[in-house]
Length: 388
Ligand SMILES: [Zn+2]
Image (tube, rainbow, N blue to C red; front, side, top):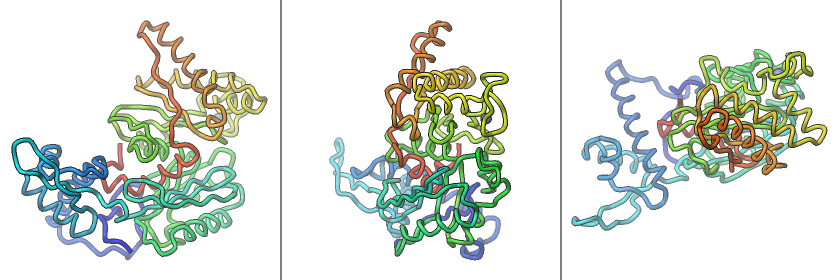
């Protein structure tokens, strides 16, 4: 079902299915292809952000810096591939009415799979990132590799029956290696160390797969504004996720900052109490264990204060524009967490004499935010928005 959409096999972190895609031509052909698909991605991204109202070819040329001829060629190809259609005419100042084009959301789909420590959520998203189908199941990361892979693959197959998809984005707690799709010692589940989750799922499902940390996936979804509301506007923000663990996704200059080894954003394991309680990671006094212990004894205000101390460290290190809070535990007490984190950031700003603290809000992706962001691991590269 659906037309052919641009490939994702050359994007770092996305493993394609061996032998499915045809070989490419000579060197010159490869360069030309890359250039064309880069410009097509720019045009597609403008069509995506224009929404149902559409955008004219002239506006596309102005906003991309491409010539009108180049834009016409690209839009003709996108229309031939079913990715764009004419969306009526719009009056223009002085001249004749201009035909506007819009993206066809249902021309392609991707799956987002959120593997949490005790349950999984899987969503089917259209090209705009909107969720068109969803499934949930209880499945523990501690159930063993065979059970987790089979359980997850079964849910994905049930969701996509009859739909051809670009691939599956998988998000789970780190640490892990996004580029190779290999897990490290997942906090609380060290038995996953070295497991090639991406390649195992490619073999099992027969579609391209990308694997990333839950926090990075959620941050990517927010940065693209897909369903989650809080678009970053090309700025920088930290997404702090408190669920069964505590982590951060960092968006800097509009793109997700993962670091060379996907090690960025290990927010929860900064030590803030020397000799403190033992954390699931094996260290002591990590912000994660202090936060989870406070939640465990029902002291949400203390958990929020601990989270705020970590957020203040981040703001001090990176000078980010915005702090967004998400995850199951935050969703249970959103006002208390926003108030607590905001108070610590506000105190810091007053001490520094820089006026008001960095704004703090709840990320509006809700319980599905991570799964939606995981689908963007496959969708974003089509719009040239894959990497930071
Ligand atoms: Zn720790």
